[in-house]
Length: 150
Image 1 (spheres, helix red, strand yellow):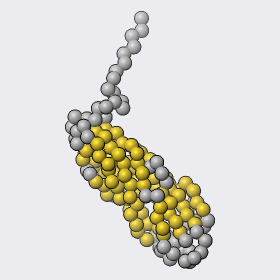
Image 2 (cartoon, rainbow, N blue to C red):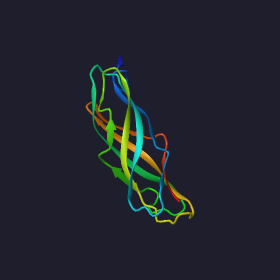
Image 3 (tube, helix red, strand yellow):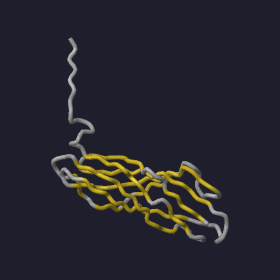
Image 4 (tube, helix red, strand yellow):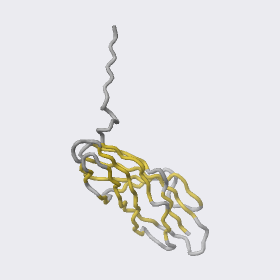
């Protein structure tokens, strides 16, 4: 005789901490003549804490991977930029509650073209790693971030 035991509440049940709906700024215009010009990429992630205790967000990192280019671009498709020290708020999600985590990812762009030249751009997919008191979670943005050089 085989006995099958189904355990409810494990895995992705309502007692878990979850992340969803990650989005990033759609685009950033990189001014002509810019050389490693810093800018902030904004992102947001929906969180839900189904646990009976608060979850503390300890750190967030981001990886921007070049997925497409148009025109002249300095990097090749597949290039990865690892952004550490991503700023975020809030740093805690209360028990049984939801919150939108707002992120600021440090980034930079270089545009060697002259003003009025042909438009080029690079599109980046953004993957976030969120380290919390409930574990480490990875989530990709549902949209891409385009850096435009004109």
